[in-house]
Image (cartoon, rainbow, N blue to C red):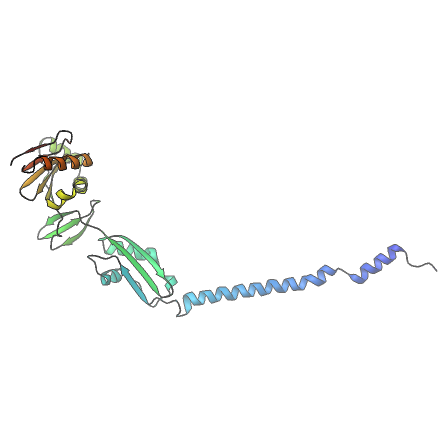
Length: 264
């Protein structure tokens, strides 16, 4: 009797073995996916609980650095950050905006989380380069022309700004062209270009028009500066002029290529 043919033996072998891949690898792969999914959910849930629900990352302290005139207590009060809330929930951009709005003296501020329990506020205050007298007080003006604070006592070493705009002639035409804020910025620009020795002696910056700015120094000396343009050249000319004529009482550097001095 003839044995099974080759085709019959192949069919039997295939029937007995079945689809090995589906039975051998299907269920383990599914179990792995389920385990990984559950693990990810647990990790995510645990992370959220640590950040929002536990006491491990609650805000406990707000530190302040960089203050000079302001006090750390003033900065913390203006920041208004609720101690005890989750540290992750603190809106740092909102804190920064709040500080700038409530404390105009602040020029720059950095708000950083200090894990696990702190917030750090790093403050840079504006520095006055001019003051404007207002009644019995003084308004401080920074190097950008921003009037940022009113104080009862003038800060030491900061010259006063006096706006005395002319009402006729070319000066009046200049005034119509440049408003008060622009004139203040020009005065600030001049103050920022003064040589150190002159800046220490400066008592008053007087503005009559855009191109008619003058200085009053200690010792009843005066300087005609002109406009805020060519500030570096004017500073050099003034330094040289003061060395050449130390007894002079008036210096004119409005045209820096032709400086002049007079009086003694």
